[in-house]
Image (cartoon, rainbow, N blue to C red; front, side, top):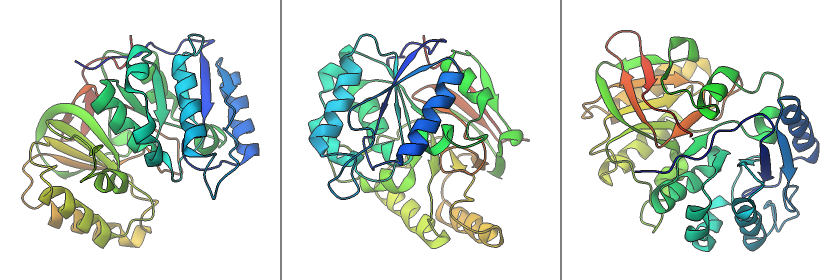
Length: 307
């Protein structure tokens, strides 16, 4: 049974960290203002603005120290990433599993932070959140989907995502499982490492940025041959607008259908979560849900994500 972190109430203190790449200072500050206007108290951690080496927001040790400090601080209610980029995987061998287990908190991020979601779920039994980040989304006008944010972080016990949230049916059916997934490139690259993603008995959410149709086909084949789709119950893909131009969307969908031709479960596409240009939908990873593609597609959440 996975651990549900505490809900985020008004006044919640949110540690703002950069486990991957260096964000733009102005965007972090703008996103922090938006969080304050919503009633949260953002707390900027020492290496949030980066400083290298390369494109990293500090050394691996500096970035993991910020993360550990945020989990250990009893006055911090949740942790939110400033941005993604690249570098989170460097932290995996440095993470203190027992510290995190002893201090379960909301962890928010997407893209490269798929590595942390996988680690926290697999090694710490902690539910996490594929949801808007400070510089990437809160700094954008209309960057955050407030309906899903409130449903997730205020503890709605049953709620749904529908065609209004971008969902379209690729393959009919109905299935129940635990929501897992994230950025497909990061999930695939974890295979063969001690931190490989677990996908069993799941509704698998997959999205990415800048990934062409043939690359989606190739990565899905990789997941199939690695056995990672064997017990997946259903699959939901992101909106894909950051991967292909509208004229290539049909080719992308055909490539997905080809690669999943032997997959028996329901498949939907178009969910506006992760790399999106529209309001970003929050997804609670680790909770039970039902993907219903029997008529109009729905992703129905069957339990609260927080306590």
